[in-house]
Amino acid sequence: MTSQPTRREALLQTVALAGASLLPVGTSAGLAAPLPALSRSGEIDAGLQASVDSAEVPGVVAMVATEKSVLYEGAFGVRDLRSVSKMSADTVFRIASMVKLLTSVAAMQLVERGRLKLDEPAAKIDPTLGSPQVLAGFDARGLPQLRPARQPITLRNLLSHTSGLSYQLWDVNVARYIKVAGNNPALPRMPLMFDPGAGWAYGGSLDRVGRMVEIVSGKSLDGYFRDHILDPLGMKDTAFSLTGEQRARQAALHRRGADGALVAQPTANRAAPKVFSGGAGIYSTAPDYLTLLQALLNGGRLAGTSVLRPESITQMSTNQIGDIEAGILKTTNPALSNDVDFFPGVRLRWGLGHMINLDPVRDGRRAGSLTWAGLFNTYYWIDPTSRIAGVIMMQILPFADQPALDVYRKFERAIYSSFKPA
Image (cartoon, rainbow, N blue to C red):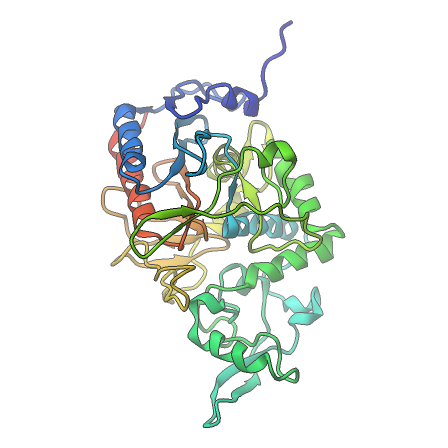
């Protein structure tokens, strides 16, 4: 009997070096239901190619799938403006904060096993989260005023970014505090910006979740990911450090100057990390990451492999923060990030791992869709109502780069215009 290619191998065999293709054949074993169709895939190709031709982005990989099959795959442009290396679907990207979804899945796996609890004090697992201090303001001399938090931090707070931890990049008070605390070892390294559960702030919460995963599992975070998520799903190109072969497929980072032109940055050979972040620092490819999205879209299961139970997927996809607004960020460093408001006028909330749009996005995703992104302009979304998930990857700074966002939005609109459910 001739051996059949694995799901991953079958996917890679379809990839042209710098073109795109419609993949009408299901790639998940045992799923033979009628497949949906994209009616105008050529128009999607043309739109992405035009974005490269007009120098909006140097290169882009974009993919969309149902839980049963890959519907669209496109790779356009170059990996590096200094070379002729064409973008391909197996190009490796730094996906930064998109690792937070992996960390959230890992935590929810341990919740399922009773090793972690969403609503008990996180300090029971990681004592460094005990006795948190809240920044109440600054006195007349500019010194920070701290007070004890009124309640403990929980895993639910950490997963929903309601812990009070906030990033310096999008919080002027954190930036101000760090400047003062750097000269005063008596001050805590990072206070909370509000009491746990009282607000929403995007910050280092998932780094703490990653540490909790390590403590209760007895494994390093990369080892846990590999054993419980990456290997089971066949995600061979997702890792905190790259092999030589993977590095040869890596896209270069490009910075956009004040004149709008993009300049490729040197690609450093980073040493393999010894400490692993639950919030940043991982590499992946569009096919790998889409595999994870398909599993989540399919109730935590793909091709006979289960990474989460359906009830855990439901919890992750449900608004966890009530009427608190989420997802809008004001930059403190325009070289790294623009202001962030992906969906002006749309109500945004947070689940256990994703941002949720409560309202439909015009000409795009439906209400209740899930999304987030990485610093270098990599993005994903899951639309449970339409039963599709998408990923688009570029390597550009600053974050929320307007031309890159325009490419993302045009791609999304083209998908929904073309998508015809079975």
